Image (cartoon, rainbow, N blue to C red; front, side, top):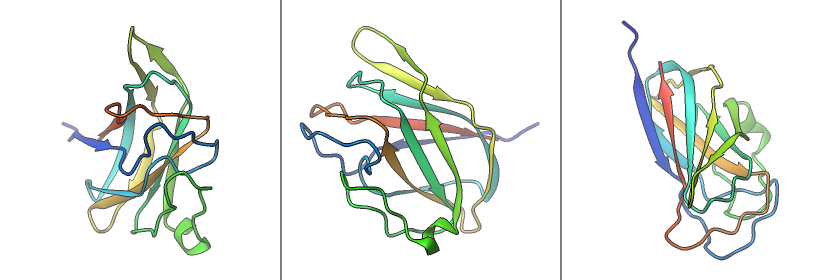
Length: 141
């Protein structure tokens, strides 16, 4: 049988009622416990504010300094060397007051320390309402 881990992350450090710019850090960096190696099979982005704007989840095998919230995403050359992949979430499904975005990246990674580090980048002009902090889950096989 194939082991399955489901990792859940609330996007940290968002500014509420503040306009974001495409290509900017959407929140602050995060770290999460993960299997040392695996394949991210599915990502579900829970959009409680119903904006439906493309997000990228940049993942690294080592800790990064991260980019300040709502500033141009700018990892250093040293940080880019540890990038294990970028997951783009551009397909959203709408419910009455919220949405989910789904990606199926089949992204293989190695995380020697048993942690993945990352940052979310927006490719739209988000304006998140208080109480609508988005989160996402990643299914890892």
